[in-house]
Amino acid sequence: MSQFKVVVTDYEYATLDPEKEVLENIGAEIVPAQCRTEEEVIAAAKDADGIINQYAPITRRVIEQLDRCKVIARYGIGVDTIDIKAATEKGIAVGNVTDYCLDEVSDHALALLMSAARKVTVLDRAVKQGTWDYKVGTPIFRLRDRTLGLVGFGKIPQQLAQKAQALGLNVIAYDPYMSPDIAQEKKVTLVSLDELSAQSDFISVHAPLLESTRGMISQPQFELMKSEAILINTSRGPVVDEDALIAALQQNKIAGAALDVLEQEPVPADHPFLSMDQVILNPHVAWYAEESERELKRKTAQNVADTLTGGLPHYLVNKELKPLE
Image (tube, rainbow, N blue to C red; front, side, top):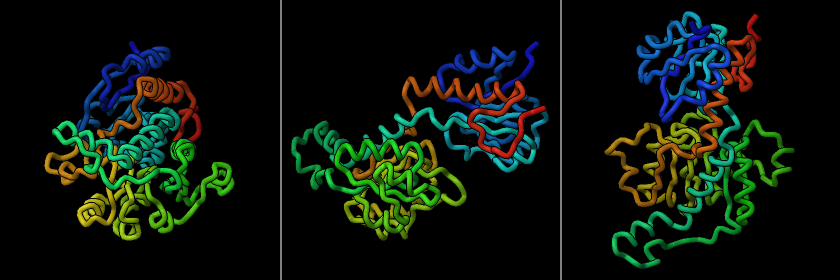
């Protein structure tokens, strides 16, 4: 009989073999599920010793029904699917993986920036529809000496800054928690959100989804932006007020958007973005490479294994918790 039960509430991967390799070493059994609702999570995980979570809701109501759970580990950096306060009150460790896709997301944000700036997708569609004319994509502006504004300046946007600077872009950032010394070392100027909105030709969003960041890019910011500005989001959809973005695009207040994340995923079939040529849409893929997926799965499982064997996750979110006795 297995020593521990670990429930995977939901996942979109082809295999759970990397997780099994880690957890079998501590005598844990993995129980896969595909939960979508609170009720389904409670039914699957009520007697679990540990939980691995992707998108299923781990709310206070769910957490209060967990009889034995010691750890909830999320696939990814963001932990907005989990009620951290409720988990902490119940003594449940929460783990994420903060360093598995730094190259992938920064590369993808830069790819979206360049695709939007050079009108790659617009021109591709035109050629495939029989139009061979560069003027379909006009105007296109030179990247060098333009300004990239980063909303958030953690590990991923710091990598993006370095890559963008190699292309001749000036980089500014808004991050009220960032040390000015680190920004200076990275040759990035810290500014207010209003200053960033007004000065940037490209705005790349890298803020985590918190109550304080929900809708932080909204009508006041769009009112300040340049008419040729392009918004890029590879963080979380709700950080951007989608209604305000749609209005800004429809009114030509900004030139375009390149979005890997949306408020509702998958995108609804009647969403206005689907008919906007100036919007590039990707299916929340910026994190992905074969290597980053394997790394994420192993590290997520290791967060669970470390906790169930008396420690805490290496990537501990609720740092006030102490190791198990």
